[in-house]
Image (cartoon, rainbow, N blue to C red; front, side, top):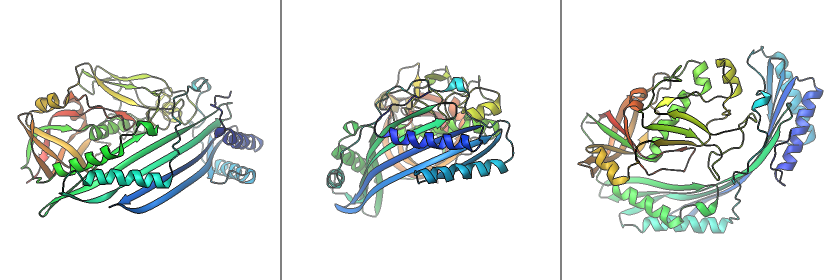
Amino acid sequence: MQATQTDTATRPLEDVASRALEEAARQGASQADADVSTSQGLSVNVRLGEVDTVEYQRDRGLSVTVYFGKRKGSASTADLGAAAVRETVEKACAIARYTAEDPYAGLVEPEALARTIPDLDLDHPWDLTPERAIALARECEAAGLAVDARVSNSEGASINSQRSTGVYGNSLGFLGGYSSTSHSLSCSLIAQQGEDMQRDYWYTVARDPADLEAAASVGRTAGTRALARLGAQRLSTRKAPVAFTPDLARGLFRSFVGAISGSSQYRKSSFLLDAAGQQIFPRFLSMQERPHIPKGLASSPFDEEGAATHDRELVSNGVLDGYILGSYSARRLGLKTTGNAGGIHNLLVGSSEPLLDEQAFLRRLGTGLLVTELMGQGVNAVTGDYSRGASGFWVEGGAVAYPVQEITIAGNLRPMYRDIVALGGDIDVRGGIRTGSVLIGEMTIAGE
């Protein structure tokens, strides 16, 4: 069964994958799969108008996994030549013969495999020369520095353009592949007033370069954000409502995704252990997985095992519908794969209540903290305990009063999820989790 968007980029990789699978069968493997990929890209960094780095990148690789019954072995190589493919399969087979049997090992169930591959419009190569990339980065940085005389220094502006092609095949007859691109532009600037120095940044990322925010706009936003942080104060320790901007709210939901992943569940290392069917969020909150959004940054026609991806209601009326599973974790839990080997594909966080615009969201916050930056990795995936350094703005009477810094926010994710009181309409699509701002009713803020 071939399910490939055949093009000039995937065809040679299909040949490599097929050769690896044929060699695995010749060496006696009962099952096998092969993942072949190539990527190339350009990245440019500019600081204060001077070119810091210009880098070309070109990678390729083959990963082979073989099964002898329930014994598994894997090997990889960056050489796609016939001799290297044969040697890599030999190494995988040698490893498999010495590993212990795992009753859950094996390829995905045949009925889960993708039969067709929808065109998700993921491939938009950018004919970007180093000279043009340097000019765009300079334009971005200069626009930020021109915002105000106090925006006086820079950590630089960066442009990155990547194109990847991947093909996956297995001994069940699946062979599928496609090409995809990712392009980004970012800028980090420093504002200074007296002894007070503050930095902030902004970025844009898209599959299609035509969808990127204008370079000057990215720079101006970075400069404006840095400027707004001047005069930041510390807060006294207190409990108060805490709001997260969309790029930070994504992290809250990323912890949720990790907690309901199959590996966290069968290892019993999740603060949401056995939580399917339970009320995790308030009734107004919903989450849908939408893997086939055209140009989506996490869109994919099939997962890392060749299983078809499909639309799914993950959270309805605040209740968790099920877990995020590949075939191995599904078997460990006595369930079926959800087509999520390798992760989630475009998680959309929504509300049955109207999403609030910026002013309405601040009014709903009333008096509390708006977090715009988080520091540290203080999230315990087993207990759900949450404690991170933060900075942002203190809000009083629904209006920003002053910037704050050097504080810590703390709570536990399980009650924090239940205490979400509002979602903003400022949906951020620059990642695999799409959400607006999130307001939590109360958290502990540790300061002076």
